[in-house]
Length: 439
Image (cartoon, rainbow, N blue to C red; front, side, top):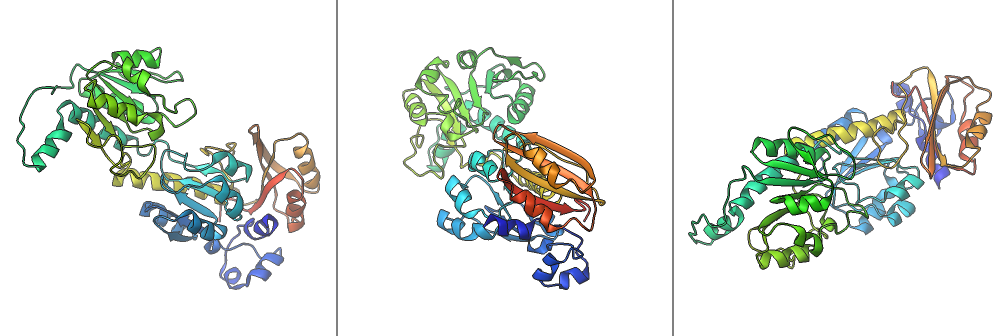
């Protein structure tokens, strides 16, 4: 039950040699025995997450296990014992898995940009913040896109295939320099804006569209609409998240808005583009070429509609697959997770109110996740009425509230206080940190 979970995992204290030698029951029952050992906090890292992340967690004293790919059934078996799981794009944390099996899960780390492999709203409703790394692989993706813009303009994909087949097809027909051409960037976030800078260095003109106002870098120009980008650009490159509004945002109608002989590139999310329509217009010559790194269903096979289309380059979702990017992502996400476990900080969480307080060795810090309804703060303050509150920070979303309360370190601050807060009908989760962030 959740009550059993919080009674074990809410305290992180100084682990002296004496404390480590105590059995679990004595360490938990005596107020003078400080901590649930960090070594029993279990971290599971999936899909070959960077060794930098493993090292960071090990240095914190956590127990780290690694695995490549689990089936949903295998995940259901291991998830009940895990306090933090790190995933990339292949591991799906569905509503069913989180609701039924994530009983000890404190948080989730998405060691990538995208978070659509995790049911964010369900995780939030269970008091589980999710962290990702929205910019650490930016350079790797931008470089990949520039390389494929040039490759498409010179038909390098087809030329490479022909050479491997022993066919010498030297030609200048349909091959161009990229200098002076227009690159249309859809989504001017971290990747889109970095691509903009690299493209201008190659002599491309840049026109971009974003649903939010963005400052143009260099000589890039903001378009008034997606349609303007599609009608103007020689190359259209997508860099948007997957949402209801971006689902199939490039379909037959949008392809027909594009210039005849233009190119499309997608390293965003597979379901943003109707690949059947792209294949149709590649085969009939309306589109001059395409590069895809993401697909509606991954992994793919030889039934993929884009297979064997002319001047079409395909890669298996490798946008951020460089050693530099994976190292940076590992450190970025792991650092956020350590801050949450040790301090309760949720800065940069994608599904949670963002709250933090400085490390403090002189307080007990209460972390309280609750349904966002009136009166919760009054009830909590009533429970803490016998203690001197040092600081208090509350932030909410329409569904949940996340409260950090610090009280002066007090030997009388017992498990009864946590129990009373956990028993509030609005409570989702309660943790208590002693000397948060300093041990």
